[in-house]
Length: 412
Image (cartoon, rainbow, N blue to C red; front, side, top):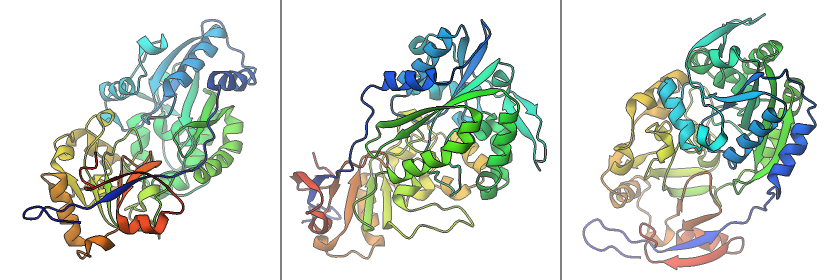
């Protein structure tokens, strides 16, 4: 452990691998086809069916979407894709189409049009205290199919979190509905999501949803084709499965966490709040663990298209990340959510080395042999990471050592 020159810090590290247990579906196409065939869906010839797809980088997203297209075409329908992502993409039609393109969802890949618009139509909202909208392209179709991953949300805890229920309301309702639900604060998602989805389903526009659950390795472990009634009945069980299958950091107390990249394709908050133990939503208590002294984020994924919502969860970011932020796109998303803390810019360091030095000053500058540091690729992929010697000593018996390096900031 050494310092080379003024302010330079070199901290040795171990590259380690965690084992979570793989539950990957081996023949995904066959599994999806079995689920879809079990629906016994009947469509009129030439029916125009909208497939709603969001902004998340779901594993096997393109193959899953392709299976939906083939299934619907086999029933004589004319499917097309619509973005179902609320205020993402700068809350513009062009921005949302660009997000889908970045995820591989294109006409060339699927053989069907991708139709993006922020126009909405009002939907009957019996008994609701707020208006209800659906994207016009979906509303004017002959039916809507939803494709989404089920997982714990980054903002709240409830029976329905991130999944088909939320997509049917906030995602499919475009910017207009996202503003309404988020304008109600945390209750807008935690308490009012289910009654709103129930009204959306009552329109008969939603034919079914394809629910996806991923394991700790970001692999597809479960797919379920669900009619609206079954979405409401089965999504809570799928959410519990997803929660129990999430990866986690190998320590509850960490001085410094270095995150190589954050992004909207990995989490709605760029970094999954369930992983880093930071929520920063007024009125919502912070998790007890993990307890992280300082979080550094080094970069923003290209798939984010400049939307760095979630930087407010970090303490320090690098100039590399800062220069990639599209503040117009980020602010459109942040202001819609109303959770402004998550869009506040942290300290901007000119380099990762400077960021690390700043972080050291905020955690009491413990002796280097006692410093508890973890460096991860992102919060979605936690199988392999770099850890400082102090942490490795605690976990050596439950992780696999891959290699050793003299500098956690330049481990290659």
